[in-house]
Length: 221
Image: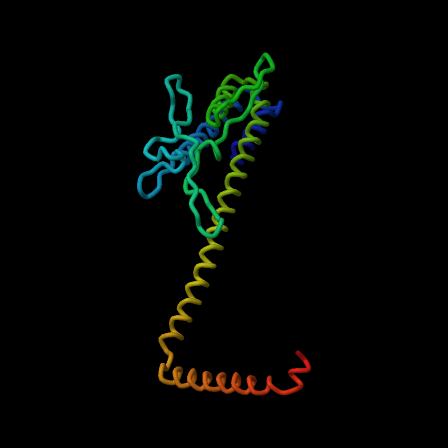
């Protein structure tokens, strides 16, 4: 996306001619294909990472008009990783590859898909449409920011999971120490010590019962 934005800014330069913009379009199309490949990433089980809960369906594909559209859903499934701590176990493709809002000729806001916006840039470069190319500069910036925010969100979730794993490791180590101490106990010695402590307690209670009968205690009462 950084490179795509750089190319769009270059193409918007007034010093560029039609042939220069067509040359830029070659790389723009390559970058678009790379992004589309990433958007349709599969995990080790063959599930599409960005399809929401429709993991068996290609996240982004061309419709009848040739436009790349999102085919997954918006459902996100959270999972508990600790006390009142949750993380998402999946991701909707519209979060990293989000739509942008564009104003049409009548001044109305229109939602445009992530890959459709890149295709519009490619078309503008081929047609040497400087107005549309200039508009694309802002759109590429918005799309790059959306991807950056999504990466930050994933990073934060990853840190949360890592912190919980560290807490779990500490708890496991503590429990192992408690178990080890319990297994190493000399029960004969422990029972003997407990009997001595009980005798001492009984003696103290007996002594207090006798002392409490003295006049000083009566006075205090």
